[in-house]
Image (cartoon, rainbow, N blue to C red; front, side, top):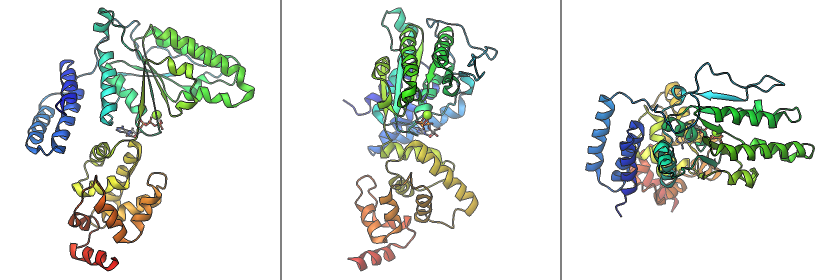
Length: 390
Ligand SMILES: Nc1ncnc2c1ncn2[C@@H]1O[C@H](COP(=O)(O)OP(=O)(O)OP(=O)(O)O)[C@@H](O)[C@H]1O
Ligand SMILES: [Mg+2]
């Protein structure tokens, strides 16, 4: 099958459901694929179409109403339930206008899974008419900073529903029995309105398990959670997020119709993220590849941090003064949790070792002159340095 067919399918789906952001995103993927397979002409032509469409058309609102979904509409004046003992709100409402239009970027297989959830939820009315019970709950798990919260909000944005975000600091009460009551109140609220219930970082409830004093209370909490998740499956959409999927009770885990493991981005997705995040700074393709290589195994959040830092350096120190190698050395020194020790050692070590790594990396495919440009030395100086070593 044509390697672009999965994208074309997703493109047709999003075009037919007339959501401009989703369509633009799919066209972007198609351009990327054409470029990767050397079809620059096709990529350029599609890029022209995309840019023109962005110029001419106003951005469409995402809001549309799922009439089969039970519940009242949330408004700014809807009152929010609080913990009875401390008066802390147990939830927060995020309305459509406050959800960002920023599309998260993922590896292809995850993208397809995400598109499929969005598509199912957007077509809820049609599926219900056919008695084709659509999935209603999704568990998103993965390392910190991989874009889980961003994804949940993006799903809500795409489906056109407000988010009811569970506030764990309000729910977990130090008073015996109160936490369970708060959970029940949270679900009662979510079931009453058209919304997506978002249980972010909800392994926090399971973590209480560590404390033997709390065992009875935890059992109550988990049971309440299970009962309410079961009842919720008839009512509306739920997204659960966790970093610690192993801590989550297996019974809770099973309650979710769809489970998506968000991995760290692959080199291609990292490249896309970097080009997006560093805008409006301009780096050459080779420089971007080098930065990408330095950040292998980074998450989206790490790349965002790096990009913000590069922008600050650009403003504070000027663009001409520093070369990419110097910048990445400094970033690595200040971000030992984001850049691996092996890369940091290579950056700070002998140039010829660094050259060997860069020139043999399958993804980078950098020529000697590209590497010389990154290291800001003439190709002949680099040649001399390398031959001296061998
Ligand atoms: N896949 C991604 N696509 C685009 N941007 C991303 C992605 N992952 C992370 N980011 C960037 O990093 C920021 C933080 O991501 P987010 O809070 O969604 O991560 P998370 O997985 O929820 O992390 P945590 O587990 O720590 O809560 C985002 O606002 C975004 O700028
Ligand atoms: Mg998060």
